[in-house]
Amino acid sequence: MKRKVITGIMMVSLMMLAGCGQSDNAGTINDTNVTDTEITVDIIGTDDDGQTVDSVDTSNSAETVTESAKEENETDSTAGSSDTLVVYFSRTGEQYNVGVIDKGNTAIVAEMIIEHTGADAFEILPQEDYYPYTYKELTDVAKQELNDNARPAYKGDVPDFSQYSTIFIGAPVWWGDWPMIMYTFFENNRDSLVGKTLIPFSTHAGSGLSGFDNKLSAACPKASIGAGLAIAGTDAQNDQNSVKQSVDEWLKELGF
Ligand SMILES: Cc1cc2nc3c(=O)[nH]c(=O)nc-3n(C[C@H](O)[C@H](O)[C@H](O)COP(=O)(O)O)c2cc1C
View 1 (cartoon, rainbow, N blue to C red):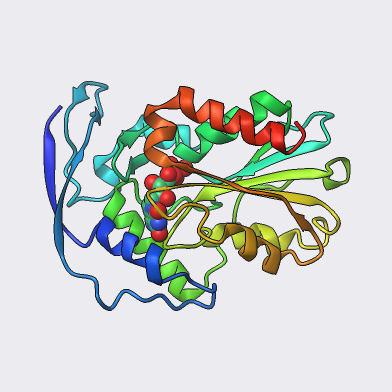
View 2 (view 1 turned 180 degrees about the horizontal axis):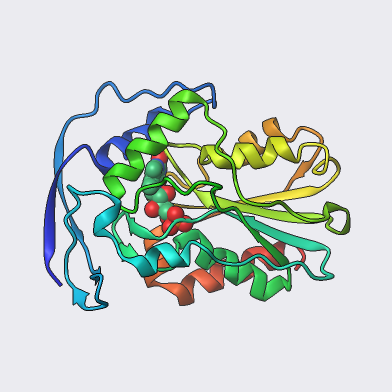
């Protein structure tokens, strides 16, 4: 595997946001002190013919990333007879410090929760999937959505909320906040979420839960908010045994 040097505004800007630029979802973020920096990332993947390649050119956008990564973003939701639901949003493609991934960090944690609890699942997938599969381009699109206080549409919806009393809701931290598509979900389902116990979880690169709990409470004021869990995205990809242990302990504390 080669190491590729990428120059530009990368994670340093995100980490600065994590420390000082928490968005209040009003669309302003503080990145005025961001400076260009140089970081190295490991990038692996497969080319169009399915051959393994050890780097992708991140100066190009979606074209450079694998078809398989895209296909993985067309995954499933399940509706059964559980009283617990896991709602999550997660991206494949190039992600921070894990190279090109074909299962998103948050999806990995979501699956652990589903396995432990037997919960049903609803994966939030964009109606029009315009999100780039390269990291830098994705951060740009996400930042624009945050600045615009956008409400990107997603496919389908939970068929029937009435059977669920507890809903785990997970996403990657994007610019110190929930991805804007999650606010679309909260707002579309505001009435259906009244009286539910909502339990947030995040994957991140240093920001932890990043206020997901308070932001969820503000978006769904008539729901109860349970104790959330934050998992480093790199651990979700690379240290799944210890992540599973953390997830299981957290779920036991919550009574599962
Ligand atoms: C657009 C974007 C913004 C991000 N912003 C932050 C951030 O503010 N704080 C942080 O700790 N990590 C940030 N990250 C890193 C992701 O939260 C982390 O890689 C996450 O595990 C990705 O999850 P996923 O594979 O489920 O999409 C950002 C990543 C992206 C793509």
